[in-house]
Length: 228
Image (cartoon, rainbow, N blue to C red; front, side, top):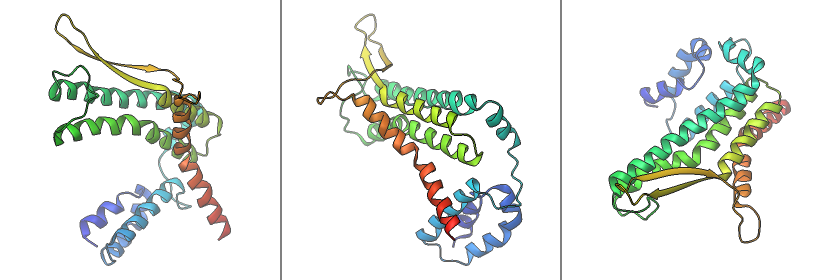
């Protein structure tokens, strides 16, 4: 394996693990086959080490653990909502700036684009907008698993993120006077589909099911660990 790639993969592990096993493990990686499967195994092993640290290794997370115990409502409720608001602000800023730069004469930015630059620029904003609730939900799940937190506040945080992500809608409009400025705003509604089922609720259930993946993986990993 390439020495640079081996070093980057080693950095995925927690610092206490690297301090104890890093030199030997990096040397082992450099002498191994650097195929995609080996790299994926190392990434998965590093993720498991961060969630289930090796017994005897002291990981300095006392401050974070203290806040999770003393104020779980803030760590799993308010903090994820603040992160989601920040991510959506950046996504909407990308949408507004792309509208101003690439589509100055259009009444809305939600139109097909021909150029590759416009395509990639707007897709950055779309990926951030749609991916933020899922990534933040994964963060809630991993933090709850890592800190062995009670299920109540992480569940509240996951449900809140899913409902907000499922009911959020972005609207764009342009004023006629005085200078035709473009405006971007968000609403939180539950529009009905043709069958009478709220689309926003279905979207929220989809987000919630995706954000539960860390917990499902953790349960499977725990079951495999107990069976061996």
